[in-house]
Amino acid sequence: MPVRILTLTLFLLTFIAGCNNSTSSTANTSVNNSQPAAGRPIDNTLTGNSAEKAAVNTYPKTVREFFMALPDKYFTLEGCEPAKDKGCKKAREDYLRNLLEAEDTANGYLKGGCDGGQECIEMALFKKADGTYVIGVTTTGEMSSNSYFLDYNGTTWTDISSKVVPGYSKKNYYQLPRYGTTIEVFGKQVSDEDADADIGDKGDKMYDLEWKSGKFVKK
Image (cartoon, rainbow, N blue to C red; front, side, top):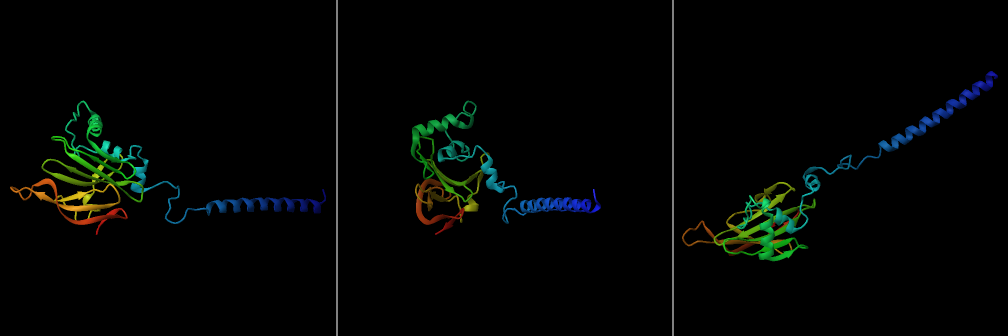
């Protein structure tokens, strides 16, 4: 093959190879530049507390499911025998069957009555931005009442009352709403013999609490 033709052939092969490398480099640059927006996880995996909750299959979807998972320390069922009834599941079902007064799934509200030594309960769910809830619980017995504002991650319950409720006090009665997100706050009536002992009834109304941006605000 003449030297001139051989040189031209080598030049063409070199030019074609260069074009292929340039195309490959451009394609790789395009892929590498396709990054998530600032502040987003690169692998698009949910992070933080909301992700931990979302990943737990046991996170309740309805107010009834929250009631069924509520620990005994926040609501004692008189008919529960833990040795025979794990998690008081049967006792909870019996309570709902016999004493349920209101169950509003759409509004995240449940109310159960009292019977003898069995205290009453009111529950209301307040939705947070991450799709989880603050669970309001008010229980009332013959001689006392208690209100809690709880967090649940599917496995562990935490009392966060003082974190989300301004001026939270065990001396107050928190009337949970069935509709809307406003809580009425009352003082508690106290015993004539013991000024520190409430008798489970509401006293005078003091103010309202409004649910805003994941916490309550005093109105």
